[in-house]
Image 1 (cartoon, rainbow, N blue to C red):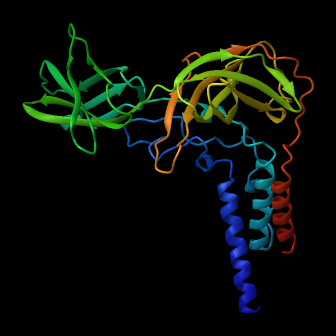
Image 2: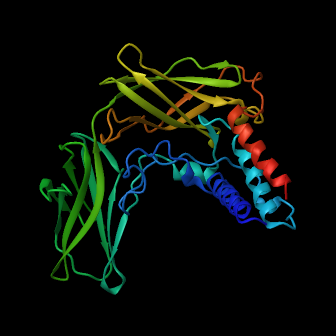
Length: 358
């Protein structure tokens, strides 16, 4: 085989394998439309946030279901083609999600940070969420378990990570022998990421517990839903948002039915004061094969103001904790048919043609 042809085949296979991985159903990180800046999801272990990536389609075939080929290159290409064909049947604005994915992308969540202590004890700090709005009260709770001797109160400081300047501080007190300490600190600072430092005296020695949070500007207010309707093969769900400043905004939410997550929905639009409505669309491919009775719900609403210029930060806002419920219109006209993106279909066909050559 000529060297040039061998190199070409190597590049084709490498690209196909990479594409198969990127589109694999269990590679949830490939969807990054809601990531924003680097700290949007997966902040250091202090907190997590559903600004992150869009979840993968569920119930998609895997390479294990394919009959292995005698030719390894052909088998890899065929597997990538099959996986890609399954993924492109869903439009990017309406992706089905599993229950585990729904919990993982549940929104503005803070994961408690546990600091191990000598003797098997733990120093744990907990916040109700990871992102706070300017001038919002931050309730801080801390617990220290184990046989350690702890002072009557702890000190908490909100600090700028760049300047190491203290923005605000307060004491966390233990009320009436409760197994935790708590206090309130106000997020009266410029938007950005901050260090939350809780200091305690344990067995006579100072111990510092460090976690992170972010402070966001007040982007505006959610103002309920408009009347849902069916257009083509989509359920259109208008969401009203009164933005304080004009700009491009991205909205995401999860569609639920009877307590079960159905799809992750997304849309983007410029809001300039003349309109306050963003329309989420649920494609027929995530609804038509289900028996929908009663109301649908939108949960975990998240809105982002996208950067106006390179280098600007992405700002985040969140909808009501309970989300919104609504009665859908007649959904009988929706069909469980692929989204039908011509360019994506051509790519899938090309992959299959390459696989057929082996």
